Length: 127
Image (cartoon, rainbow, N blue to C red):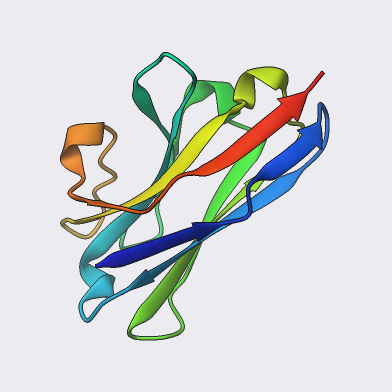
């Protein structure tokens, strides 16, 4: 699986951004898709994940502000979006998309659960 992320940038607090990640491969329907973020000097942590069946899980601080969605219309390219609203300065981080083959409803939440990663995209929220 190859992952290509896009959509980062600079936004003022309270604003919105939409990240997208195109996942390409032959068996994408078997993969959970996720977004992680890494703040400066900190480890990489889960933001949100969508399972093969469409169930979702969010990190507590983004619940009600971020929405993860999955476009599976194409067999060989699935796109995972992260709509980020009401952004805060503490959301500033490098955001990474990730994919992992899983059972149908599983939403892996730890970094070491994922073996496929895209390049990071920087999100900067100014106060």
